[in-house]
Length: 150
Image (tube, rainbow, N blue to C red; front, side, top):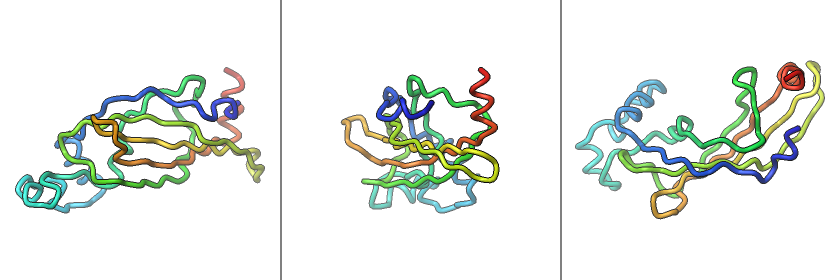
């Protein structure tokens, strides 16, 4: 079901690192570092601007991968890692897309579980990679049965 999506990727979607969104995200994760929200601190930093917290790309839109029809609920966010070339600057546009890099199944006490591997990318307006992320989405037996009925 998901193996045929390996290698497929979404189209690039423009996202803006918005000041208000960065502020709300920093508050939500309990990180009050002034580099995220205080404009003077940002201007005086080595980056010359405020930056976003490292996990901020979690809120970006990465587009849809054709043929990858995941349900809206019942999935488990397994693991996610980020690798940065440089920080995300408040106010800049980032072009994001994702690719399916793998799919495996394992049997457990609750039945078969699928492990969907995704790699996501964020590029600046010149096309340079700013960050990549790898994530695992766990698809439970119950979700798989529901998808088979549709």
